[in-house]
Length: 350
Image 1 (spheres, one colour):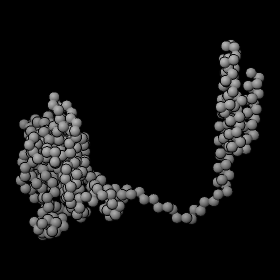
Image 2 (cartoon, helix red, strand yellow; image 1 turned 180 degrees about the vertical axis):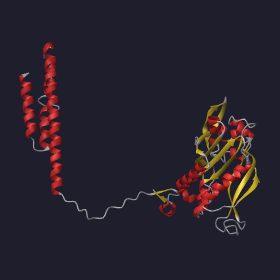
Image 3 (tube, one colour; image 1 turned 45 degrees about the horizontal axis):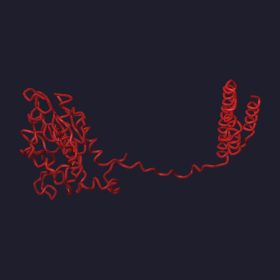
Image 4 (cartoon, helix red, strand yellow; image 1 turned 90 degrees about the horizontal axis):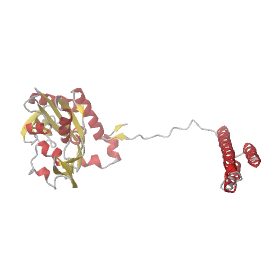
C-alpha cells in the first residue's frame, strides 16, 4: 500500500514538471500504459489473499484515476499555452479581400412551386402531400380510371414487381402518374369541406422535348355544398393572372377526363405574342396550360364524400410547363440536366 502511494506521488510530480505534450505522454506510458508501474499492480491481485485483494485494488484504481486526471488537466494547460504562444507570434493580414462563397441558386421548379403555393394560400388553399409510391386503387381506380385505360398499361406507367394487399385484393405498386392520389387520401382523412393543393413529383414512361420520365405537378381540389363551375373559372383566372403578372385571358374547351364531369382544357392567351399568333402558339393566339373540371361523383364516393351533399372542382397543372411559359425555356429536359449555366440564368439566389 505504501508502494502504491509512492508511485502515485512520483507520477503526479512528473506530470507537474512536464513541459510539453510529448513528455507528458511519456509519463502516461510509464505509469498507466499496458505495462505501466501502477497498471502492473492490478495484474498481481490474483496472488493476494482475498481480504487484501479488495483493498489493494481499490487503492490502485484511486491512484490510477488521480494520475489520469492530472495528466488530462496538464495536457489542456500545455495545449492552451502552445495556442496562446502561436497567436502571439502569428500575424493576420486583415487587409486581404474575403474569399467569395457561392451559396448556389434555387432550382426554377422549386421557386415556381413556392410562387404557386403563395398564390393559392391567398385563395384559401392549404398544401397536402401523399406517397409517390402508390397502389393501383389510389392512382387509378379511385379516380374513376377504368382498367382498359391506356394510362394503366405497362408502356405508360412505371410498375414495381411486388404487390400489396388492399381491400382484400392484390394491388400492383407503381410510381404515381399524377398527384391526384392526394385528393383521395385528403378526402378520406379530412372529409368535406376541403380546399387543398398537392404539389409533387410524378412519373410517366415518356421522354422528348416536352416530356420527361419525371416531372412535377400541382393538383388542386375544392369541395363544399355550393361549389360551381363559376368558382373554378374564378380561381383559375386569379391564379394564372397573378402567376404571369398580367391580366390573362382564358379559354375553356370541353374535354374528357375520367375523374371530372364535365371536364375542360384551359388555354391562356399566348404570353409571347399576346394573342396575335406566333410560332409558339401555332398561330392560334392561345396556349394550353392545364386540365380541370367538376369532380366526378365516383371520385367523391371513393373519397368517402356524399355527392348529394357536396360537390367541387379539381385541376392539375405541370410545374415545368408553367416555368417554361413564364421564363421562355424551350426544352423540358433542361430542368433535369444539372447544367450550371442554366441555373445561373434561371435560378434565384438563396
